[in-house]
Amino acid sequence: MKSTITVPLPEQAYEVVVAPGGLDHLGHWLTDDTPRIKPGQKLLLVSNPMIYEHFGERVKAALEQVGFQVSPCLLPAGERYKTLASVQKLYDAALEQRLERGSAMVALGGGVIGDMTGFAAATWLRGIPVVQVPTSLLAMVDASIGGKTGVNHPQGKNLIGAFHQPRLVLIDPQVLKTLPAREFRAGMAEVIKYGVIWDTELFAALEAAERLDQFRYISEDLLQLILTRSCQAKADVVSQDEKEAGKRAILNYGHTIGHAIESLTGYRTINHGEGVAMGMAAAGLLAEKMGMWNSTDNQRQRLLIEKAGLPSTIPSDLDPDAIIDLLQTDKKVKDGKVRFVLPEALGKVTITDQVDEADIRQVLKTLQST
Image 1 (cartoon, rainbow, N blue to C red):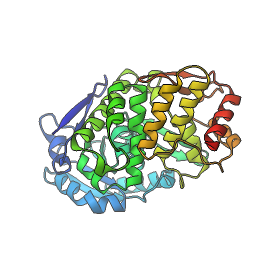
Image 2 (image 1 turned 90 degrees about the vertical axis):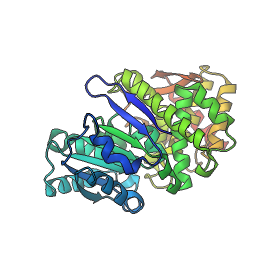
Image 3 (image 1 turned 135 degrees about the horizontal axis):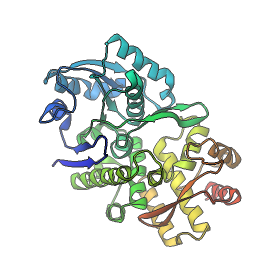
Image 4 (image 1 turned 30 degrees about the horizontal axis):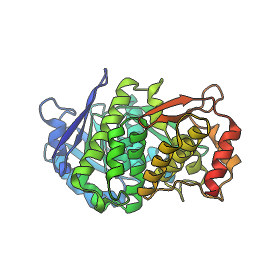
């Protein structure tokens, strides 16, 4: 059961391939018909030790089978290592392996590996190809598609980065069998996001599922639907606005407050998906408070977040004022005003900077006392 989603960008269209067992055929997808990367080139295979132990040699063999020269480079796992210091290690490896402009980097891992590898590829020799092979649900449905790359600054998430589209995104659903349950739930936050901002059929399918909190409760058909519809939603939005000049900002639904919470907790106690879930709960309540959408839809969103085993409240020990202060460092701030993505109905959101700080503070306090 293979699905292919095209991201139809004018300068460089590419495909997202969802294929069970696809890891073993990566080399052929890169070189068959019109080669995405010229056979025989040097490839830097970037991963972390745990992911590489599971899948690294399989991917390396699949690439070497068609003639690529593959050199692994392993980075530590975790959001706190998503820094310029880690990217420096990729530059060092690229220099050591003599990567040229026809060479490429292959990201085998979750969103952190994908973001750092993409940024290194975007900036090495002013840009070399990158291939995304995501191994987490979050990376599959979000981080690997759309060309956003970057690293964190100590004062904020993803403040340093570049747009650099991949040549191919290969998603092998079978790798999710080894994903920790908490990380699977983190990915479900982004899936729910697509249901709220874009795809009501996806939202309904998630509501109809008995459980969403662990991989083992997801049928193959539902998983394929989750992956293909989420990737299609991301492709649809990105193709309309590649570099976030306007519409693409709706993909940040739940991320404004979510990023602030992640940053405030040092990327250690709350992961990205959990932060996004809290951010969606806050955005939903804020929209309800402002009269933008109804309490029934907000309740449906909250129940779906909880069905996925994600938090719909905010820890009581976080200072609302500290969260609000961090909103000002968000990369979506424009002319000094924080821009929020807020829902108007399921499948429809709007971007606004007309949000009163007092309302934000009240919503945060409400979610802390729930």
